[in-house]
Length: 557
Image (cartoon, rainbow, N blue to C red; front, side):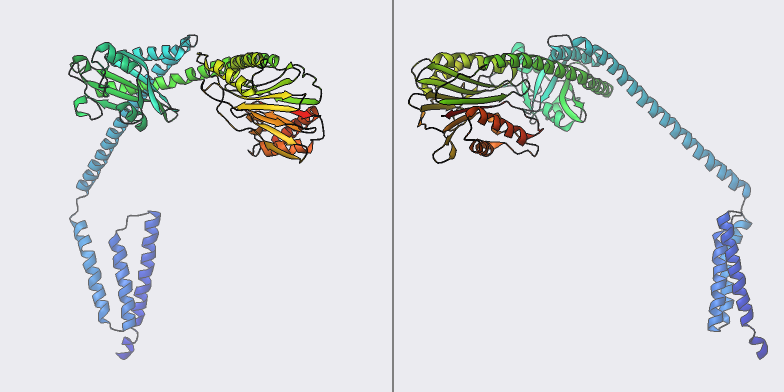
């Protein structure tokens, strides 16, 4: 008996080995999918292995009995289910489930196709509208007021498509952060609060709206622009953004559609459509149509903006070329020879700017007038003001008046001009008495006057910035009287020279100018100006400049 008990561990080891082998085969079947194996088999085999192992370790052989019982209990529910299972019904359920899944897939596919068809139809409408507007916009290129004419066409176009009673188109001005009305048509009750002193008469209200500008906040137009979200206002009474200016019938607000005009994710304007309160309200379909049409308007505006920009640039270049040609004729072709002095100058003209003007006028033996002027503006505008300044100064310097008085006279003449062009100028006037070697200097604006004193080798600015010419008739200028000696140098320039930048973005500056003049102080004025010009070009290199650069040098021999 004892000999048989001593061999009890052998069957336990064999049971564990067979269990592990069964578990391995079950896993292979699962992975290779050669047969469907219920999860219960894995559990039963695992229980047998664990039970046999635990019995082997504990030597309590009763455990193997419990292991057999647990395995049987685990298998029993599975066997019962399989015994009373109806394969036919199961197949019918699976078939029904499969059919249901296929039906759902078909319905989803049908819905997807319907959605795709709607999107395609929407994009096709947008393409059709874009084609119509793009082809139409080219016909406005030759119009004198291309933008205004096209806005009027767009206003009529979108009003008809949406059956609106009124339409207003506003474009944004990023410089002032305002929206300005560019086109107004039909009955459009203002959705903003009218001024308290404005009479409630149709013509006055329409005029107020036609020339109105709006900030980007505190009004419905600005809200739509900044949010970049289109808005359908079916009931304006319930919308706090709509102000009711009634009770007059023409001021009663009905339904509205507000759509931002967006180009490259930037809102550039707003289209607003209105419908009278007694008419049917705008529908969601009409709202969607309006959004599509405004998208098309935004697209068609791009070539129009490009054309207008090109036309403006071409006109500016053309005017600039003419102005440059005349500017060169206004500058002295040859500097006069003045006993006891040498004169040097240069003027580098930036393309189409034409703002700098210098002159040397020998009015009498004891007065030579040196003028350095920088005219505000560009092209033909600058040339017109330059011609006016030149004519007035050439007349005034022939009088015995002081330099400050001459500038005051010229300022009154410029301020009297009532044209719309800017007429501002910075001027340095130097009246030099070659007999007594004295200079009287007066300036307006930013043109500086410098003096190099040979006695102490110092270089300093003797002028101060003042109010430019052309601002006010009441402006008062002052005189600076200085005594000059041999070797002294007077220099004046425009701010375009001092503010020119090198490739590192650093200005040429007064300091750099003084170094160049001091370094070449023993040369004559012509050579000094040539050396400054050479130094200036070397300093700035290939950096692009945006203003004329001019210098006038006077050296006392």
